[in-house]
Length: 304
Image (cartoon, rainbow, N blue to C red; front, side, top):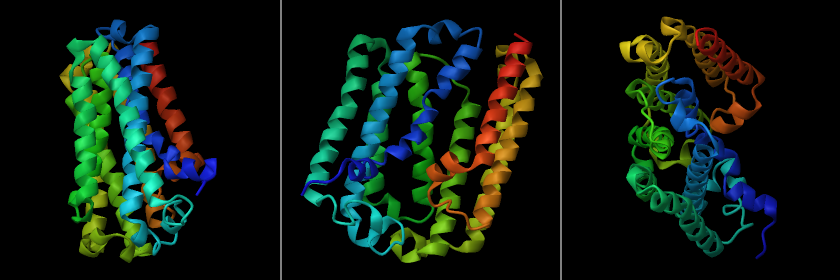
């Protein structure tokens, strides 16, 4: 059968490539860091970052297709997932698996090329393989284990952040890795809470979740995210790296506003089962992101 381009775009989850925007975050912090800005300036670092972004997009799409084939029967029970091209019969399982293999191999090409040209940066290809191994484990059974599944998802975001640092060869504060983990855990828990309310039978792991526990973990992960970010802006390493000093802590205000907004959406029964849709469509979250960029740029430039 021949599927339309729109069906393939949905099957590849192009809208979820926004998760990989965490990769260039390392570039943003490196450019702002006087001790590392030379490593992030120019066209070569930009091309390296673009290549790593492309690798993660194709590898993630490969596993999206693989998961859709494996879960097509369960997806047909879900009010939203039943419209996925494989579950809806728009793309045959065999063709989807072939496309999955092609995407996976295509995703390895940019990282292999970068590795061959920059052998001293071998960790960048190690991160791609670690991400692929994690995705394989997730698809193979970890996604059916309650609470473990959301931890694996959060680790995936940490690997994305690591990918950005390894491709540029820059340092990245452990506090920011911890912040990426807790934020991803927060988003994943909110998603599971929504799925538990909407269609529990669509995912095997959901039967093992309990709503009071989910509510507690959602609140704890939100508070941890904010606390870790504030700690990052105030630790001696950060104060020594940026001339703005403790003024960087002002950027915690939009971070807190973003968390509060997402909590409001979660408990107002918005469709947080699709975080990428919320992040792309909610004007208040866009305003918070713009505010964060403005505050960060203002603080870093004012005390440059």
